[in-house]
Length: 114
Image 1 (cartoon, helix red, strand yellow):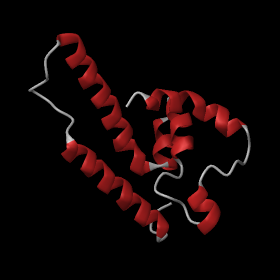
Image 2 (image 1 turned 135 degrees about the vertical axis):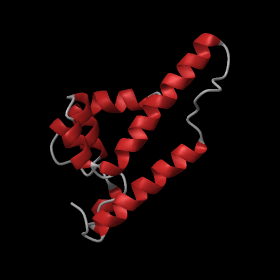
Image 3 (image 1 turned 180 degrees about the vertical axis):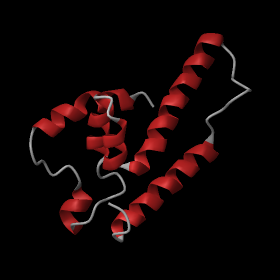
């Protein structure tokens, strides 16, 4: 969960290096993988450009939000010393985020979305 800030910080550096083959799936198949656009989305989020992040990878946006909420939840629980009972980021939310990611990928894969 704490790795996403590192991704946000390194995304602009990776993008500045030019055309690196960051995705083996795309390199081998010529088609985008479910995570394609994630580096661009992280770079756009680091710049505060939410629209560009959504356009780069709409399927990842709910997962980024869930990661942020999960981090806040764990931080609250660590500071308070007790488990939160009012709100939880649980497996069902992560599964819904995964379904959304795969759905947007399939739409992109079959040319129904940009």
